[in-house]
Length: 151
Image 1 (cartoon, helix red, strand yellow):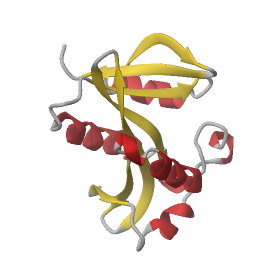
Image 2 (cartoon, helix red, strand yellow; image 1 turned 90 degrees about the vertical axis):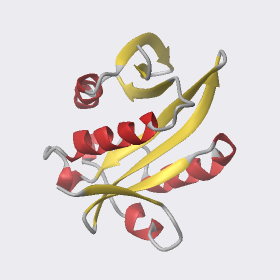
Image 3 (cartoon, one colour; image 1 turned 135 degrees about the vertical axis):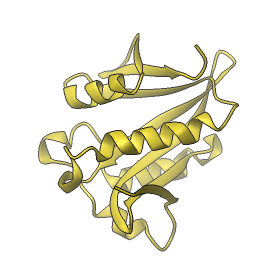
Image 4 (cartoon, one colour; image 1 turned 60 degrees about the vertical axis):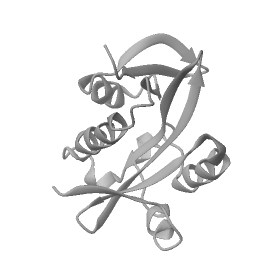
């Protein structure tokens, strides 16, 4: 496994728009076109859409953006998806570990925030295994988790 990130750009966006999650996950993750549209809409919040590759093979997408909450600067994991053919093989966890290590290098963040649909038990288990903790907050039908940079 040789994972790395590249920015979504005019040369690679079409490749990533064709990746998809499993049918039963479609209600839990936005379409890739919607993810790219969100990156554009949130550009004032320093949104970054990353292409996830294993060597030269496109396997997923990740969207992050900044959020200020009560004076704390947070990195929001807005969307994360691994293509259905690469799921269940450790790619998701490895990609998240790599991404968290990138975020930790930015000393301006106090935490990482994400949310997931309550019925998405696999995502919950993944995020907990990486050190995310439930905040007790719910945004509409999504459960919020936080990864604190400093304990």
